Image (cartoon, rainbow, N blue to C red; front, top):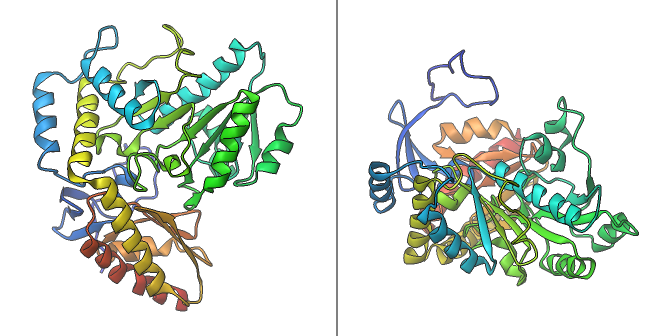
Length: 398
């Protein structure tokens, strides 16, 4: 039976295709709706709730911070910014950080860094290489960098200055930029999330790093969704042994408290100067405390290793259960960022999974996305498979 919730308020803009359910509280990897029904959370607020729900160490820390100071303004020093920036740059092998409120804002800041980098070199109309299938946000600039005509439609004219290339093809990148002195940066996700969990190959990442060094471009890696331990390393590009010049972060950085960050390496560290960029709420004491505590708990509880091992267990179980099933194209991804591609659109599975007590999403019409909290256990991974695999098999027989 479908779980029903009160209809959305007519005063809320109709921007989302919502399922008819509303949640009241959560614990660990489970949430409960307004009717008391329990669900296994395979979505984590879209790769946001790193520590799951109602974490016994995060919640008291946030309560403590709320009682002290939530917002104070960047007119003043914010000690939490300095502490979180020091930790993030240490983990990333980079130099400094700017804090904002979301992945979109972090990506927007990266685009500004690239343009300023180009202008500082004397390029009047800097251009940035972006990728087919990319998703960087829904502001006009990040929408223009995004490789999805469906989400761009109706918002033209798009921002100029982008060169689009296919994934994992270094020769295509070289051809697209040949004899072009205006290129300032290459911008991409290590694993594309919204297009259906499409990873960049490690050898390709190293080739792009070498090309950026050779041609003095910024290598800008969007780790908004695949970063913060989701693949088993702090940042997904680290599997290739490279370091970017610019790296936007958000989503899982503060376990549900809105936060974004842009990290810069030596080539980009001094591009922004006072007056070039800013944010009213960015780097506020509450968000910084949430980020600091999230990383501390992740290290304390070994959640990178957990994401790697439980993710491998989940992927292997899905592959075994769905092996040879007609209509299952591929199970792909790394750690706790997995996609199951089917041979036909499968949006109907969203409601069916919800009815069966599992939260997930469908990307690019035909790819089931699983991005659960990084505290997921192997037993809970087995529950996901036990719920989801029969739904997929039934659906594909229809």
